[in-house]
Image (cartoon, rainbow, N blue to C red):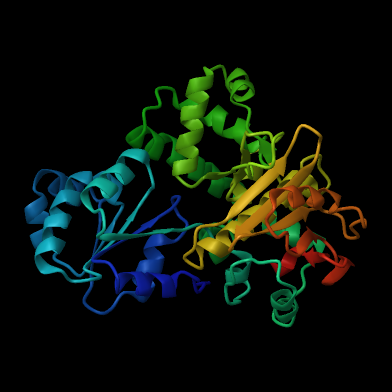
Length: 404
């Protein structure tokens, strides 16, 4: 099944504004399919996965651009960063918006080359796997706690049961998993093998691939937890600086995200380490060796996976709207904790994430700590497995997870 991607409109809008468009994200999230689905007739396509095309791009970039003249889609641009200065010369000469559509992994050296060579000429669109809204054929909306938006969305969204939510969590968000019946375990085994043994080997300074794979698994076991580089390093048998470097590789390639703590000068006792979340819960479930959604739902990691799912869906809702996710979390030394904070337009919107179907009235008790910031603390949400959108108190509403 082909899913309509929310980023289609963002691609077309960006293409009208910049001569170069770059869609970045993890492998197999649908970057190429997205561009091909909205490309006009006559736009050429070339993949640098092709060894001959890659060799020509690296050794004879001018000849490459003659052979694949714009408008063109160049897939996997990270394999030939030598092209970027020549693309700059081309767009400076011709000044045509939308001339080059690129896809690539957001690795450090590739993105450094993009920023240095194409500054002011490139529109960068980060992309992740399918959102639940895309799977269900719904219009994307950047998540807000606004009750009017939530009430309106209630009329459009299909309710999902707890088993359905965990089936979604177990499958993850890779388009290939939803296109046809296949073994999810075999799919992710191949995915990890490709990611570790090809992308990481080719694009990063990782000497021991098996050790890096153990590190990837250790990170999966810590999804929705605060990052502790020393513990990660100890578990894998590497140094703390190496753990920090490898975690940066996973973040830059879109495999996971670090949610930073919310900081305000009035908040003196905050814990400053970020929280770690996998962006694809299916990959995380594979790495932590769950073999069914039923086993995952009753496991000790059930709550962690539920929180990971909610956070990743909220982040995707902003990315799919072409916006930077304004997400933070809060934890202090007095044991006050807020799972997620949205900060927009000078206001903060606290969110608690609970697997429970009936959140207690004190579920948002820690929201009051944000009053110290001096910023307006607007309507808070408890995202949970409730059957309906319901007020818990005057300024806190319980929101079904399937409503994101």
